[in-house]
Length: 483
Image (cartoon, rainbow, N blue to C red; front, side):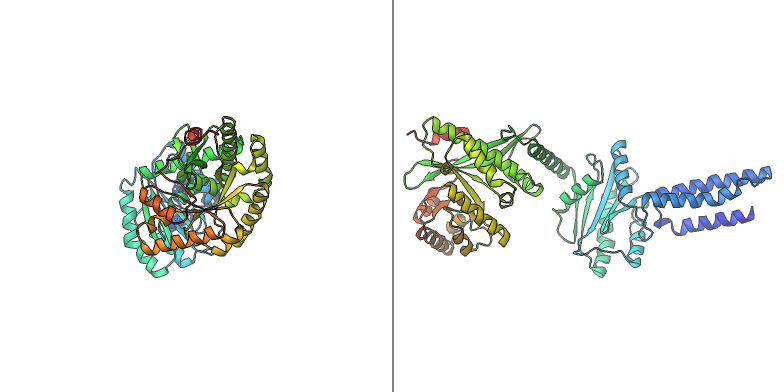
């Protein structure tokens, strides 16, 4: 009996000393187990028997071994692993419990290994402010502190105070690059995979070595993004070239030499059940990031070609309509065969469709564009360079591609409209392209003065709100003439 009491005292002493290193669930389980074992020993003493004495010695050890194995507990930091966080998120989702999350990621180019010194800092760092929080370490340099909002109603204030008063002090000492993301509930997050997606979405909006608290408006923005992404995935997997959710808009282009509208640029829109009309700035980056852009481009190509055929059958004069292609999709398997198949199926000539590229950013992209431009030219497809003048432009590469039309970005026109030096550069480039046999198209024309400036600067085509905002492609015939 005396021996067991000494054994129990040692365990209790260790629990008190290392409370901060222990996950809450393990701590509570050990307290419960020791209480049960203590009652068993007392009952045995009263009954003058020792039948279960050995069990009371080993049961706490079995509990520790089981909990550590099941939860991937890190003794350095007192943090639980990815499996535990995944299970925790599922439980929170089922119970609809409000939880506050403080997420820390070290942004380094190498795999960070927590030192003993840093580990001690971590397990003492959080609990001064959040004694009832649960700390998770789902990946090497990513930590998540989860706090029950009912127990800590002022979690945001505590977290901000922790960052400003304590975290910044340690950052000045260790200089580990980081991002801190704070949010107070995730009723739409069911598992660890979704949690990573939420964190990555929020962290993109956080500057390096800083933090940000996200609220309800941010959650709504994320939910909309997630919904749009799911719809894009469904569109890509469904594979229909006539998908009704993908709409073709277009902007008529004025021919300076004839004064007519004989070309246009097709533009992409989505109409989704929950959000209605969605503009490109909200879904194009997602489509490019997750690999759905090619299917969207082929749908737009198909619908544009069919509309060109319909306009021709009705006697309208249309030289061509351009579609935008991303450099990434040019490398898709059988891309060129799919392109040709769609145009032929619509029953139009290849010269009535045009393709627009943005400037390639590296040698691989450049070679890919160069190869595709050559194939397009053999087919008779007109090729455009889109957004000339944005960022860095390699003039030699542009010229070597031997494109047909160069589209000057609206930013060049805005600068030339206000600054003499910019006006000189605009005229210089447009003169050079004209002498080399390229056609020049100016985007973003909105005023009479801008139109006049473009015409002086060797414009062949003009596009912008002065002539027409983007319209459904079915409305394009009202800008065309019948032949």
